[in-house]
Length: 180
Image (cartoon, rainbow, N blue to C red; front, side, top):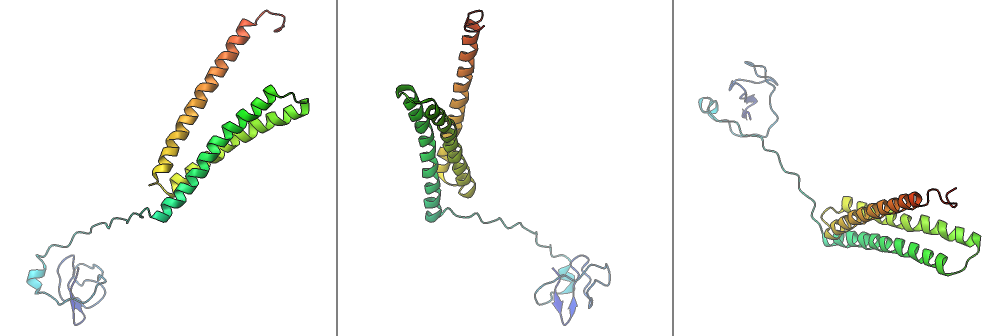
């Protein structure tokens, strides 16, 4: 940086020491903004290396105990939704299978099973994502993320098994009176 004394400053670019205006009289560089420092001897200033500009690292927000409580609360609600969804769907399926119901009640229960079960799982996954975004240092949130990934993988495997079973059943029924 340039040094200033009695309104005169030294250009940091070329070392010219008789500048009085806003720009260097020799090279045209603008006068830098600085605080007052005593002016060194002109001959020694030209050989002084300029300090390197270092980037100041951004301070990372600490994961406080309050953040941990909030993250755990989100994760617990997410986990409850992830468990309640399938349990609710299985309960409705059990009622439909073993309890004799009228046709309209069966349709209603089927709609509940199809909408509420996966809906609860999706809501739980959304809460887990919110937790991971707001509190990335939460270990419980990381655990739930892995759990949901396994959940999705298991669901895809079960869906492929169901499709395979349907295809093999349709192929075995080909040409029978039920198939037409």
